[in-house]
Length: 507
Image (cartoon, rainbow, N blue to C red):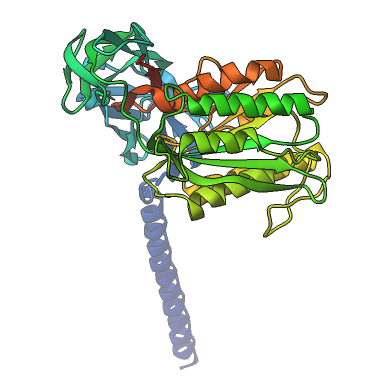
């Protein structure tokens, strides 16, 4: 009995041990299967995160790595330009700055290309695609706008600047590409309207067609830097068409001008005004005369309010009456409150004259010295503070004039006549670059209507001839304006897109 009990107990123990061993074997097998499954699974597909940017600089397509994972040299790049497909790998064009055979942050791929000037209209965008081989994923899919640049310029030459009535003149208009991304351009349109006073005869152009009714000359393409020329023949049929002009003469009456020179200025101005071939008497000019000077306080005053000049004896605008007033002008002397004169001229033209946004406004400032007064707000007076303050006040006044009159660069202007014989002569560079308008100003002669200019004479003895020359240009000439109004390319320098010349017919 005891043996049996013992045997039974042993058998139970063996059974428990065998069960435990079997259970352990089962658990071990399951763990192995799990470990095997993990080892055999390569995990999810590798993802690549990268930021690429595409742009065009000149004639180079640039792809720049701007952050994220590095890309291998076998990354495929493809793009479409002007209907043609291009394919290459990173290795072909990468600028590998750190020499690690990877495309990393800040590194660029540069692909140079050329524009086909005969098919520029196809160069609108570049479609780009970049595929990373390792992750088999698209890293860049998009397009880059193309903005080819070419500096186009227009110029003209007139065969006779001083023709008589019924004379024939020839105008040669040329368009040139001075360089840029593209050595040329396409779809260029030049505007040249036949002005009143001239009659169109005929024209010939190297390329494209000119329509004398619309004034448009269309050029399908311009190749290289050789100018393309349009020749127009016209006949002078009148002494010129005079558009109505509000004209302000802003005169320096400061003490640096001695009495004899003040007399020369008054006489020169007066004589020019009574000569109808110099200053028109047909109601086409409204004249305003402003004088600045004085010391108690420095100020500007109206000498002749806005008055339409005419040849009718009984009217306030009779040219002889105005001429007499100019001859008898009393000099203010004192300081040089230039800014006050400009502000007063602006308000007179705008508030007292026949102002219209569409009316031509011209201001001419005559001075022999430096602005030396500030401006007292709300008045036309100032205080003497020397050239730096006077300079700032004048610049502010010029801004006020442009704003008040809403001056239009295609029709209006502010010019200067500088007399250099004084002890502190005018700052011609400052007048030319900062005060005269439209900019860029230039030193005249030659005078170019449509741009601000500063003209200088050595002494007041030269004033009479120069002021007559200026008046004849401003009021008696016929403008010939050639302008680039359209082109396929972007023009980085638009200063040479407009060329204005003037003919002054003899009566």
